Image (cartoon, rainbow, N blue to C red; front, side, top):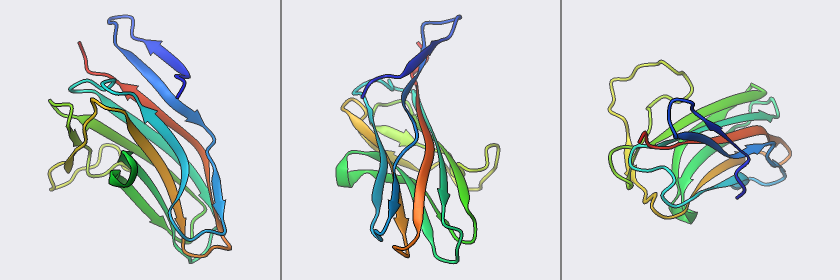
Length: 165
């Protein structure tokens, strides 16, 4: 994937890099999980304590049927669903997810609540083992309960925030 834009912090050489951004795809007629965007996270780019910030804005049919949007991280079928939102009787949804390497390039953790920044939880951060020393992928997907409806990924942005040197 082509890097779209990089911003350099004047006080250091660390960069926040946008790895993918723009409108995604839409689905109508399918009731299975469908890819709306796929972004490559280059091997080793997160470092040992780097992170990804993923923002996705969806619009969908406003009805009582469930529309499920997901952000997954990993490769292929092993990709972990790091956030899943199932909506009914609304027409839009914004998802923000932070995925963080915690002291190792294979230990991933994320805040329990991604939608409410600044929220609290009695739970510890969930974690999983995903090897970020090899290429990994951010998958943004949608699933419809009723194939006559639709989900559109109106916009997404995947930001890479590398380890502080």
